[in-house]
Image (tube, rainbow, N blue to C red; front, side, top):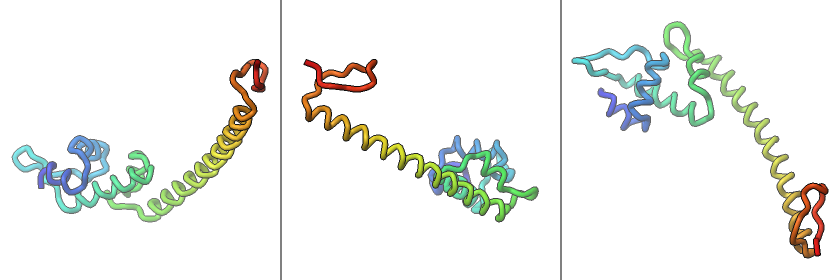
Length: 131
């Protein structure tokens, strides 16, 4: 099938599909009359690549999932998924702390405004109602 059909089936742009091929993420695609002739397996690879990208996995990491024959190294896939989950867990913890900090600042600002605060002297390190 032509690249436009692969694009339609996978949602990947033709430019992205060519990039995947250039990066070695797709096995060499045969050509018929100068046109690439993609297989159902190529469609599956593009779908897998797009799914991995959607999970926050980089193209470089995806490339390392293939063994020397262009097949998936399933233990490497599992390790990558577990590493990505660990990164996400860490990011969630960081974002939870950011949320707590934002809540605290919002609470303090709300209290200050409720007490009649209208101006803030930033160089003093604390805001106070100014007359």
